[in-house]
Length: 359
Image (cartoon, rainbow, N blue to C red; front, side):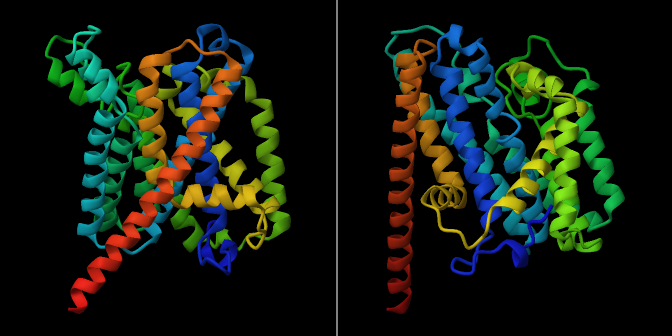
């Protein structure tokens, strides 16, 4: 993947524009699919348009996040302790986010307006848990095996294939089922179990090693065009398989090794497309917003879930297309506003800390 900062960096910001854009598009796709899953009525959700919404919230979303995270987690130079700490912090954020996005649901449960099992909501396996576990794995593996490619490939194979092989526990001990859901199995509240989803950040590590060892980042434009044509042909030829699998939520969240490869082909296709059509010095307002959302993807992701999750208890699977569009636009505006306020607050805190140190 051509994510080498020397090749795709905006000279004004110093950031990798292509990577930020990919993350911005991914979080945009996640917002719309969360709205489809939680707000759209079943007629819309089961229609062809609803299936397209689910697909666009699949291959172009979480796999992109995870591959990019793996790429930069390996190629950057954080200390072992700092990377472990960051992984643990993301796991904690996952629990806090579950409480936050289900806050209204919890209130309704405590006030006896509804009756349900709250634990799948509290321990739902969202992407923060996957990201945290992946960072810890990469930190440990990087220290033990370094950049020895064959071991990373073996790890990728194990992670990508094991979910279909390891026998799942379906007994009556509830804490075992909840703990297992973070790693493998087919529990309905496990959206990103480590098997197979851990294969994506490991694929990012592999691409980082290949970029350094075999100079993949030095590919010419003509070579990228060839890659794009080959991947486009492959994806078109197999699109029915990929579309059907990704637009089926249970099948997507607990997919097999073949779909891992299909999703990775889609991610590489998207990288090639971005490499060919986007000039890092281009200043379109839409591209600037997408890159900004990608740069600040963590708070943006948190705020969109807080909004969508708490509104869902009012509008769960009851809205029609125009209403979905309105909710989508409101969520984007509010998430952008709250993310901007969060950035300003962090800057103020840093300024105050600097002043305290100077005294």
